[in-house]
View 1 (cartoon, rainbow, N blue to C red):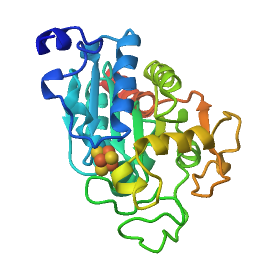
View 2: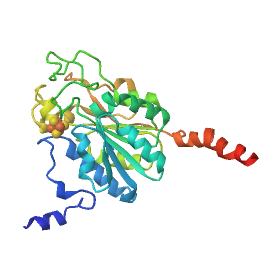
View 3: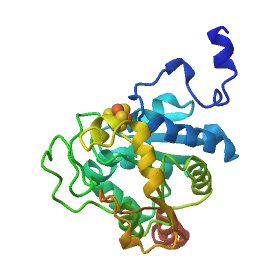
View 4: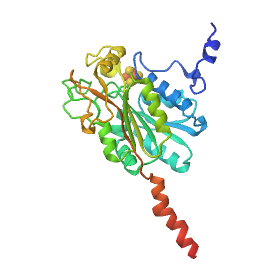
Length: 287
Ligand code: SF4
């Protein structure tokens, strides 16, 4: 079959820049699965594609906007959230998604992450967590599980990692979820739910990085990491948030679900109430 015929019948043609394929990700990497779920969720959301914007930082996940046929920005390291904040404040009609990795969002961009959640900026944040800095050679990061081997923790990572759902919930995110790349349908449905909410929404996706993380930790290839999730994952949206830390221990569980789905005024709601109403209202009327 000629290549043109295959490309023109791909179900995601409308939203993928097929001229940029094949992608750069390693065999067995989880990133293509997450991007595919996101592309299908955008199409199923009913939100016009020209309203979607995808913003990323640096790293393997940072390449996602380049493969999507919607407006996108591949920004500087750790700064996807400030770029995205500017976009959504300038044009609140946009559906802005920050799509980045654990190193970019939680380490280098960690301060932006916590303050955007506290302010309840109207952003959808997808954090692909593969427990290491994959692109730069498999170094440890703040989500690396305790005891895991990385290029910068050859004897085992001695620290306690961030438990991201617990962290984001405690900061006031209005929507907090976790899935793995094994849970493609649940992930897609969760992304659609998140598109239709206002405020700071956070979805963690645990994904295989067979090159940077799987190999040094004897987890095998990407498929073997999927089997790891198959064995360890449990659905429990009522789980106590402080119990959601990911561990390398063979008896530990990877708890998944939508843990928080609530409402509170967004940053712009509060800005209108406390600032703009006073600046534009009483004083200008009296003058
Ligand atoms: S280094 Fe890891 S995260 Fe990056 S493309 Fe390869 S498998 Fe994926």
